[in-house]
Length: 394
Image 1 (tube, helix red, strand yellow):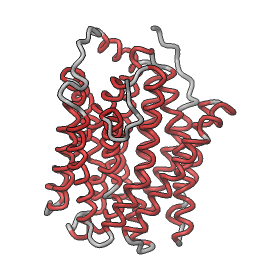
Image 2: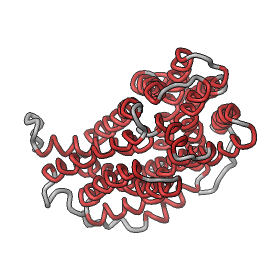
Image 3: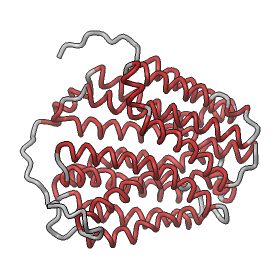
């Protein structure tokens, strides 16, 4: 069976490759967020448009991951995984050489398609390597890795981008040695396509997604992502303007947010939901997010920013696992993976929508208003959880 005693066995390396490949989707936005102010200044990009560069890959990821997921089911997930890793490295590094906004936006969109392949195929590989409780445990492990890399990648991006913003894009080149390692870990017979007879699930999935409890949770996920990404995109820009922080310190602030989310996700979200109920604990998380978003324009020192970012992360760390848990609870077993994948797509769409929606606010009322608007969105999301639903015939 699996030989975990040998650290360089194919079984061990497969898991490592899949987890690292999945984490690249976090690097796509996290590594460049700290250098966004420097990038915008050098390429002469308008403030309202600049945030789109950090989130545009989320749109193409959300659009293409379902299609690439179907392809992974048809030809085998490992056969999608390695082209996706390779193209991720190519388009990720190319971002450093783009001379203007539109060329960089195009490359970021192509990077998002590669990320869609990574997201779909890495979940597909885990789904075929493990069954039952082992699969649940490994998916939880994958979530922990994503949270951890959400801390590491902004720090790395800020550190290497402190010398020049282009260096942050070169971090994407880590995909190339990962692809070579994957070629060894997965032989030609690995995870070949399964013959599937699960026809008719498409119509059932559409019906489930149109149910009001499911739709409400998906809308709530989208709103939470818009608010969360406001911190990723606009906090570095605000800190650069108000406090003159370097990319390295911007990365530290973004890491503080992720550390708060990691701590509460790992140790506090489940006990809190058990103690006061899933909806109430989620609403509490939204309240914490709202209470820490609104004061950002008033903060005048780095220490205060770090504290607020960490507390914001605590709120988001309560909200996100609770929303996925609630979505799983309302999903039929045979469609659970598909509905959770739709939830992931909605989250990425929210990240893309964040600078589009909040960019309008920025243009009309200024940068400080972006944080107030994001705070209002989180309050609306929390209230949505308690909105009474009309009876819906099944």
